[in-house]
Image (cartoon, rainbow, N blue to C red; front, side, top):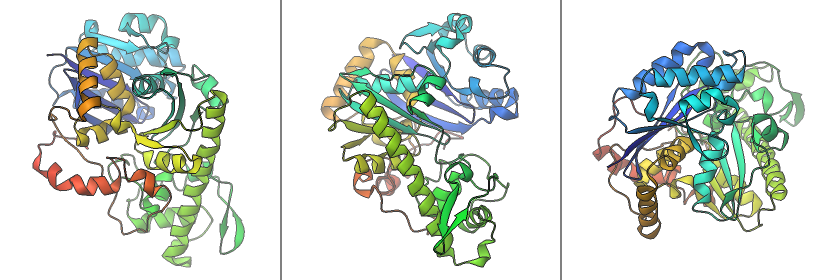
Length: 411
């Protein structure tokens, strides 16, 4: 039996996926605000490792090297690898490179440009094993990856953050941490065009909390003002973006403003997806594969593009509930599966593809939207309904999920 632990080390979150004998049996995301100090990553690594069984291998990918804690990305890569190899044997560590290979920690430290921010490639490489032509749309708390897949291969034109930003394959927008001022410079309010303050008064978490779309466990970061995450507090932050107090208008006004901002983000992502798909000649009928905690937007994007949609959860060999969490942490799950012994991974993937079944998970988890009473957006509901991590599916699985054991400190 082989046990592989996949790590996706980001600047805001640490994501992990545990693969046993070729199947994902557990996955987890936890906050790790690296910009506050390297000790935050150390604490997250220690907390993450404590309840997990000992792994034979550790497959690592990262984006945290871009954090402004480090003087440059090469220094970041080396500091992150040092933090990992202080906690697990260096000989058990393999780091995902942007050419799809898994290299030793020493090789990665010697050539940091090969492994810096390569997590998107791992997620797409796994998807390419199951989808011949498609567009991976991984929407997280901070960024969105748009990765074309052609003829079973990753067909991205950009190889690093700079190249991908230049081609819209990386869009620095997400559903939790993005400042509202980055979503729009002006909005419509009470029939008038109103400017948006260039201040960090509110974030996209407030927007999607008010639309009712934000899964409760997706937002693991503090709010912009350090206050709570109730609907009333989100409305207060959003009202401040247009120079007003929430009490100056009915709740419906601020909820409508949230829907307007959500629609603006979706339009931006749809436009980027069109450019990426056209650049890689992705067929018009090719599937959108939605990953990340914001994949409810990927489902809506697919509907706008007139493309079929499937959740990344369907790409992962795992129990349905675990697959939904693993889809939140797609690069961690992908790098763990890609780092598993190939024969076990192939046999498990083949079994999952033919039967849709996988062995029972070590731990299960579910993604429930915050029960806020907010009126949710209807955009993309038909596509999202088939996503095992969608709100409807989460509600259906809640009774079963409560019966299963949960990992201490999980989502």
